[in-house]
Every structure is written in C-alpha cells, then in structure tokens.
Amino acid sequence: MAAKRKGWQKVALYVFVIFLCIVILYPYFVMFITALKDKSEMYAIDLILPEVWRWSNFAEIWDAAPVLQYFINSMLIAGGATILAILCGIPAAYALSRMKFKGKGIFMGAVIMSQMFSPVVLLVGIYKMMVNISLNNSILGLILLNAAFNQAFAIWLLRGTFVSISPEMEQAAKIDGCGTVKALIKVLLPVAAPGIITTLIFVFINSWNEYTIALTLISTDAFKPITVGINVFYGFNFIQWQYLFATSLCATIPVVVLFLLIEKHLVAGLTSGGVKG
Amino acid sequence: MSKKNKALSVVQPYIWLLPSVLLMVTMIVVPIISVFKISFSEVGRSGLIKGFNGIENYVEVFKQPAFWTTLRNTFVWTIAVVGLSTVIGFILAMVLNQEFFGRKIVRAVVIFPWATALVIQSVIWKYIVNADYGSLNVLLKKLGIIDSFVNWTGTAQSMFAWECWVGIFVTFPFVTFCVLSGLQGIDAALYESAAVDGAGFWSKLFKITLPLVRPSLTVSTVLNIIYVFNSFPIVWTISKGAPADQTHTLVTYLYKLSFTEGKSGQAAAVSVIGFVILAILASIYMIMSLRGEGED
Image 1 (cartoon, chains in turn blue, green):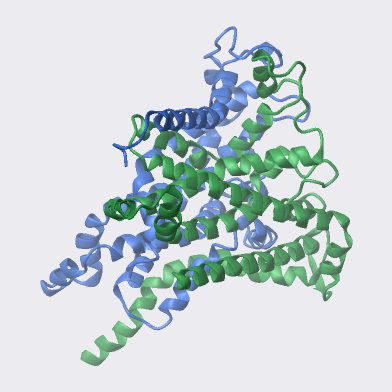
Image 2 (tube, chains in turn red, brown; image 1 turned 90 degrees about the vertical axis):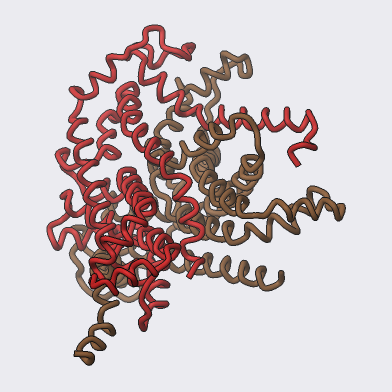
C-alpha cells in the first residue's frame, strides 16, 4: 500500500497531520506564552507574543499563593490513592485471573457497572457520607474516594496483565513449596511489572487530574489539590492569567510525560483486558 | 487436613477479593443507596433528612423549565461529543496507522489533550474565546481574517457549542488510540488479498477494517458515552450553566441545585434520572453492537 501511494496523497496526509498538530498544540502554546507575559500585557489586544518574556512569573507563583502546598496535597492524594488502589486491586485481579469460584461473573459485571456511577452523579450521597464520618475536608477522604473510583480500571488492567501470563511458573513455584502469596509476590509480580506500572501511572494521573470531588469536599486551602487550588488566581473581577497558566503548566507537564511513557501498554490493556480469558 | 484445605480453597477467592469489595462498597455503593434515599426524602437546607416525601422531589424537578433545557442539552452534548469524537478519532487512527516520517511525534502530540486535567484545558479555552482580549480574536485579527473582535460566546447556543468543541477536543484521542490498537492487530495480508480481488478503499474499509476494529470501537464508545454524559469540569468552568441556566448538562445542574441552592433532594432526584438515562443509553448501544456482531 505504501509503495503505491501517489505523491498528492502524501501531501494531503502531511497537510492534515500538520493542521491537526497545530490545532492540538494551540491551547498549550497560548498557556505557555500567556504564562510568560507581564501583568500589563495581559489585556493588550494586539500582542500574540510577550514583549518582555517574564520567566520570573514561574518563580513568583510560589509566593503569590500556597502553590507548593497544593502540589504537595496533589502528590499525597494521587500517591495515596494509587497505592491503595493497587494494594486492593492486585489480590482481586489475581483471584479473577487464577481462581474459579461462584459469583465471579457477577463480580466482574459489578466492577464494570460501577464505572457508570461517576463521582459527580453521586456527589450528593458522597458529600453526606463524608460529613457523617468526618472525612470531608480531608486528604484521607480524597485518597479513599479516588482509590475506589479507580478500582474498576485497576482491576481491569491488572487482570488483563495476569491473564496474559501463563500460570505454569507459579504452579512450579508452589510445587517447590511456595505458598500462594509467596508465589504471587516472587514469581508473578516481577513478570507482570510493565502492566502494574502502567496501572500505577494511570491511576496516579486520574487522581492527580481529579477536580469535581475535591472541589466539593475541600474548603480549606491547606488541603486543596492543585486542580482546585488554581482557582485562587481566578478572582471575581480580577484574573491573574499569567500566574494561573504558569501554575497550570507546572501541573500539566509531568503528567503528560508520565502518560507518554505508558501509552502503548495502556491502550493495549484497555481494549483487551476484558476480552481474554 | 484435606477437609480443612478444601474449605479454605472454597473461601480463599473471596478473601482475595475482600479489600477491593470493601473499598468499593463503602465508597461507591453506600453513596448510591444514599442518593436514592435522599431523592425520596424531604431535605432541609442544612442537609438534614426530614423524612420520606414520595416523589415530591421528582415532581418539583419536572416542573422547572430549566430541567427540560438541561435534559435536551445533555442529549446534544453526549451525542455531539461522542459522535464527532468517534468519527475524528477513527479517521486519525487510520492516518496514524500509515507509515510516514514524524508519525511518532504526531502520536505523542495526540496524547496531550487526553493527559491534561479537564479543568486546566477548560480554563485555557475560556481564555482563548474571551470576547475582550481572548487570544483567538487577537490571532485572527493579526492574520486579517476578522476586522473587529467577535463575541464567540455571546449567546447560550454559541457558548454551548464551544463547550462541545472542548469536549470533542479532549475525547477524540481516546478513540484514536483504541482504534489504533485494533488496527495494529489486523494482518496486512488481508488487505493484500482483498486488493488482488479488486477491492477499493471503501469496500476494504467496510468489509475488513470496520468489522475487525469493532471490539475496540465498542469499548471506546461505551466508555465515552458514560464519561461524556457525566463530564462536569468543562461546562462548570466555562459557563456554570449561564446565561440563565441555558447551558447546563445534568451533572452541572444537579451540582448547582445541591451545592449553590441547597436543594439536595431535587439534586438527588436529578442524579437518579441521570442513572436511568445512562443505563438505557449504554444498554441500547450494547444491544445494537452485539446484534451487529451476530450478523457478520
């Protein structure tokens, strides 16, 4: 097919691809150049690029608002949720991929169904429950919720990974006297590492980017994650776009890089995890 | 000993599932029950449940014209965003499945919108389309395409159209990568033998490509229907339903009812209505795609 492709088709392909890249990158370009503008240039209506490149904006955000605190909170929330989601997800995925038992189909169905109940439609219930157990306005509460709402994906991806690995090695290890838990930790997990890392990063990114639950539950600056925290630059009358975008850029770049690392594994896992086995 | 082992092996799988089940039951199932209960209760402004009041909340919701606008918006939003994202994502996957110089870079670029927090993406677009100093106006004026600044979000319809655009922008990459993983599993020999038989582009597309990527498309479409239907940050960041509650979707509407107007009972009723619609949408799609598979 490639050999037969005519010249004009190649040109059309490049025109399409370049146009697409420009459209996709445009908002990031805007975010970047606006983050580097001076306050006085913000509302200048004939300026695309900044006249003075204010790299110092990136230094000023940390003093302008408790941005560092927001980043630490995001790390704690996303990190905690990831660890909890994996610790609960691995045994469940193991049972689903290696054991036969009654109710397996029902459990799998329930896991997929749980995806339909996104946190936002449950907010009224979540808010009430968290107030009842005094976990509203707390980082622990966000960790528990993010871990729970990412369970379905974690189990889905991990099970897909485990199913694709032959159980023979674990059986051999068990014959050599290993218990099930030891065989899982010593034999299966190292082989499954790529799939586990993919799952870890995916849950981390989802929790890092989460906005709605945090917006609803957290009212104290000290516990806000960065997605909610950036609102400080977004006053009623006065928006500090340069700081808003400088902070947003800092919150976005690490996540995009992480995502680039796992993209191949992730997509294969998402589309095949449930089909096999 | 063997009896004990047998008993253990029956119970064992459930022990392995226990942490996961506990987490999901406490954090997901309990709120689901609570939402249903609240939707049939009279709730004070402080959130205190005062008692069962039948379908009162639902009646109140149905009485408001804003609810019906919201419902219509939600359908437009879900169908437009999922539909267009699927078409764009599919075409892009076909393109990225070709060999060309710079393909890896384009793949990386397509990841960007998928990986970025929705709230950040929404804030940027809110800035871009701002009527007074937005960068789209500045850019188009510099390029000589417009003479004076355009008020891109002047009406409820144009505001909502921009929100749909942002929705599509963040949704199509997922479709692209799902379809791409399906395409890469197709044996090139199939296309070669089809070409020998004289099949053109369209017949290859409909006879080979579409049937073989259908499982990937089903996964991406079902998940997208659920996510887009439930998507909150875009509409909330860009318009908060303004002007005059004309641009809400169900989730932003219920958020406003509950957390700015203190009507938790009605908000819970909207949630339940949302579950029901979503369940119907998802099952219609599942049935249609299963039936399609049966015909092949």
